[in-house]
Image (cartoon, rainbow, N blue to C red; front, side, top):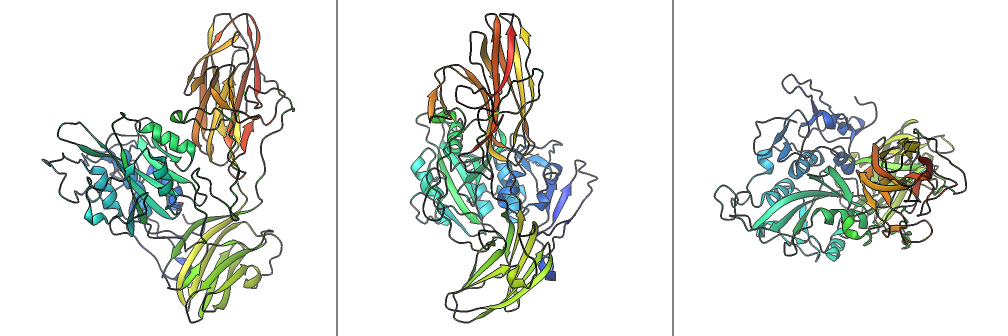
Length: 613
């Protein structure tokens, strides 16, 4: 099972669909350099998580992503034995996966905190004020209790816009409810306090007229910041199942707000609690704080250009993200050309992806960063250390690389002195030229004792790749006839934040778009984005399906109902687009990359001619 170098936190047990005769695989994860084995709680993973390689995941976002797409089930949960059940009836099991918002947060938290809580433990009535017959109603503070139970015993703090301290022990679910869910300024202040490598659990509450109740903590979410300034919110809802969105972006926040619309006087609040995860990458160099728009400022203080998305821009409450363009294989033959250049850029040749990190023994006064490239040519990897103490420390680095196991020994001088160790130059390696691609495991020892370890990979960056797989459109129809156009598209590359499929006709008198499923019709006069200008008003209707977080090899389709008008031959435009992964955030990758024809937004399109008889 351990084909590659790996660090993990404990034992992981697979639960098959046959719960009684389960075949069990226990992974004892290797501790670096023969120092022994580390065991945390055994955590039981059902097939759906196992098949998504949760055993290989160590990054918090990657762990949470294994839950994406799991169906919403009312009261749905995963028990401590890896069985899908419900909070209310833990003796009832389901063969099919299903989680509600609380079930999702509990399941992901088990893997993040390396603790196999029972459902009874996470739903404990902490203050004894929400049991049967409680004055405020049974389980009125269910979400509040859940968040506090999961973060108890870990270094935690309440994150409020004012930045002040709010000791949990002094409050309950009525006196500590957080900030107004719709307050964008408050969100910006909260985002500025968030840090990668930490988890943020939140309870959403609202006043209610339900008999016997006046306040309900009715929904919970999890937020995980990334190193680029994104804040990924995970939750489960009736309409969207388990999904995530970058709420430190306008699009993601719009989507969240659209999911929590309420009556004008129904003020919802969100309480955010930060917890430090038990296994953290050693301290990194200070990162730029996310801006209000969710874009991380690079070194030097210059903010990168705002994304220039390729798609409809609608009012905020409609949460429309930048658009997509398409690739093709279909019934009718499209016409193509080369007049419009592709809007895409290539990324760097190599990147360092940090897979996991662990501090075995914190040593006061010693600081390190995660490994970085040693120079712009990317011919080496730099390991950086600083000694703030008043005595020298003996450093030993053991590096398991694609070229073999190498060692470095040296001294970190005291009083704030820095030490940079470069692979391969300082490890006595004869390797020349560019770095070998593959996984690297670095262990650092101080004065002979294990201090920290980093697992990282040197890789060629992967890019998203929009591809239209099939377009079903008739070549000829009768006047007045209603017919369907179905477009199927795939992301043939790396996972993208968003993308979409768009269909339009420049002449509605011949081909009138009537309906789209899934997706929607944007009528003439809608405000959309454009290649040539920031925004335009559409002159003709367009149909679009927008997908947030378009996964690798994930396929989506768009079905458009069209009404044939007066006789003639009319073009139908089809396109697909994905936001680039390793290119600038303003770049949208398209299929077709070029064409002799463009739609009203200026994007290249595949053209399918339909004859109306």
